[in-house]
Length: 88
Image 1 (spheres, rainbow, N blue to C red):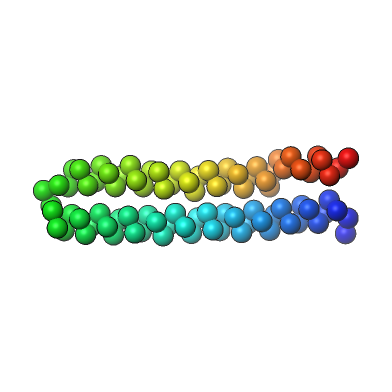
Image 2: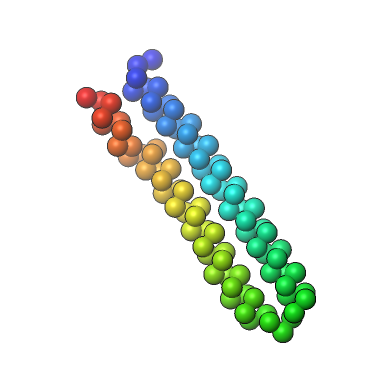
């Protein structure tokens, strides 16, 4: 196995591990945010609009982290700049 094959294999394994972590962590964070919002709604139902607006903004920010991680993993898998460097 030459250096290029090993590097590509290692990049693929790292990308798979990265996307696995990058999906699990925001999922847990979303679950905690929703649970906290439901608890807040149970305590103060009159503040529903404010709580829901804040919840949706927070969920969008959490989801953007997963999307950024996905973009980085796709770059590593399909257009890795180090492959050209090793190919010389």
